[in-house]
Image 1 (cartoon, rainbow, N blue to C red):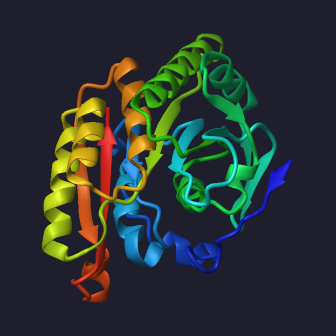
Image 2: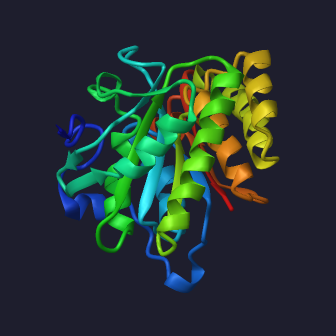
Length: 271
């Protein structure tokens, strides 16, 4: 089963020449071997430079597990795309079915489902960047999340950890990166958005999934990908993550000049 591109030519360029303008040339020796990262998923004209700042400096992988929020409300609470290919103007990407099966096997809540992915942009928006940075073929594991429960995030994070460890045991030459797709505060004045996002980013930099979860809920931060990020952080910590770095933060107001109602974007690497 193939999922065709839904947002090329509108949310991101559909021509390779235009897409390449977003990637910052970085020598291989300066690229960082990460366990995972957090990248925004707005249209590239707004958040592309933030995502690019991350993708330009990370060493590419063979498989990317991409967790995004479910904006549409369709499908399962935790929906893992089961098999087949995702298509963008830059090529087809195969779903790594072995990791999909392992995640679903080890999670109480993750289910194989395509409906949640039909019109969801949060994962597709990352794929052209992966095409641009990865030499040769790569595979993906797309997961959308619409839960609001820490224990379900913990279940998924643990299942991803177990799946990666089991997969790598039998495929030692393969590298897996976890990507949490998330924008930050939505539709607040610039100064207020920055204050709220600083609180959330501080918890991510401390590698505290529970702290992030509680901070977002306590302050009512409209970070749409908080549950994918919490789940990803749990898995990354189990995989041995020790450090996190904010690579870039900006808002839509920095692009448009409209500061009364902005969306925040943070690019973070974890290793």
